[in-house]
Length: 332
Image (cartoon, rainbow, N blue to C red; front, top):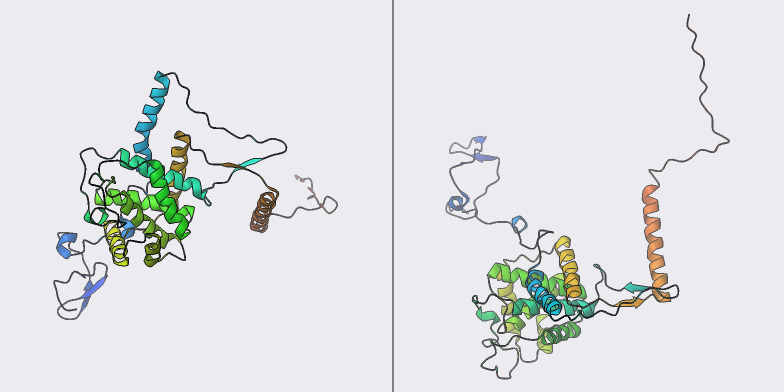
């Protein structure tokens, strides 16, 4: 407590005691920097994240633009029209609604879009190659007892393989679609903070670590690490704990996901799906769904009616309306 070289130097007191125990105004020394005082710690809320700006494009959407442009160029050169999506249109008897919203995304198609985003990350990674951390290396920390092939880091996984891996974890752990979006946020934040690339050698463990962390942050009743060991039979609890610990450290414990970031990732995933002819399903409006929407609409209408009631002026009846009488002015 009395060590003068302690890093816990207070930087905000307005008063301090001098050698004669008299109180005097505190004047901060402008010549000393934060490094000199040992107060170089930055609060987590003061950090600027690349994904926090609402206009900043997500990394996966930027990486997918090259493939989308090449695909459109190839179709134009070969005179092949792009595959048309079978669209459903509403009629007098049937109304089709998009079942996916930003507050309640469709689970199956959200996982498909997240798998597609991870696929573009792996396919369009830096050709020079960046650092590969041991904790994510599947050769050093295999997820199964089967022998890892010698060329495990040479072949990019297909989108279907990524989708099956993510879907298996989400189905077994009963995770939500919102958790899938937060998983993608943590994955891109890890690649930015740790300055690494996701590649065939580490994509499974990076995705597993992001899902593990997102499920604990998002869901109220999170899945324990030992439960993931029941899904992945050959992995140990100690390995899961170490994966979670190092993932958090690489994120600098920044696990906050603002609503603006969540919404940006959701709509960018929809843009990615539209560019790759992966449309969200349109479901016919059922009688039960119609009653539910009507109840929600009535509830919102009553809520806003109560909010407007104190400010609304009461109108007077025409029978009781009294107009002011003007008397002529007398000028003398």
